[in-house]
Image 1 (cartoon, rainbow, N blue to C red):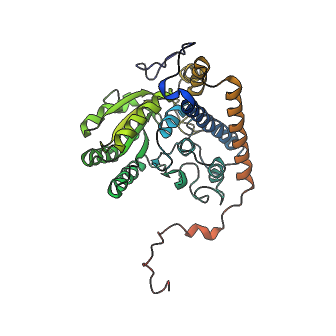
Image 2: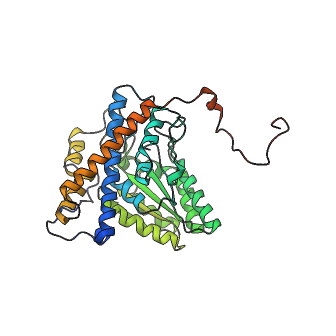
Image 3: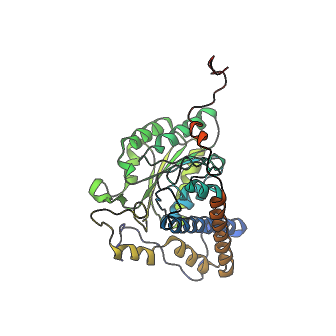
Length: 357
């Protein structure tokens, strides 16, 4: 299989081997269940999104995380619900991995009043404060300073919370990342910069736009550790992020984690570019050999951690939740047009004008 990241190979399951330390015992099994469940919820939610997009039920574009579920889920599970998180335009997977409700996320894609942003955000601009998701945006790199600012807020307030910041290899070349990493390193902010390196910034290959082979190399310039992990291995992503989270909670500052991964669809579903850039053989090779869910299920089988019937039940429950979310979204009302003028300004006490009174 042609490999976009040839230096990384996912370890093959070793029948009869013991599960890694993180997945041992009752707590370890519970974590393994969450890993599988969240990856499946992302996959099934986005497969439903494809069908809805094809049926012209969605008034939005769809940027899918299919193929990248292990990186997202492993990273988010290394945090708590009170920790903050920012994502990017590929925005469904991040809040799902953080534990957000599927029904309100799906309603947002439909532009309905019951959506997490009242129908104003759509597919690319999801935010769910109930799980610490501060927001995502179609502007490349725009959430990076938001995550950095959130980390500064936690530091000033003296909490032990951290900020998890997702971005892609394209955003790694934006000046705002370097400015943010510089200040985070100088002030020892509790932020984890997590690069989902899927090899392409829309259609531009990383090697055509970036002078170094690994984004993680850049961490040294800002006084923080940088690590490269296999983005198709949910345990590896969890372990690397957990180490960075623990370091941040101890007051030791930021870290950069780079997950080498791959998206199985176009930059945006249905996007038609004048010149094709994805080779069918490469995409199918990744689907066949590097599907993060299939890889994890094979390991669970070899470790004896979650039996086949249990895995089937997890998948069934996730599918039922996705189906219910679609129906919830379909049945929900559209927002009142008057709501278009709300949420524009902060409602800050003591700032009323004479006219307001």
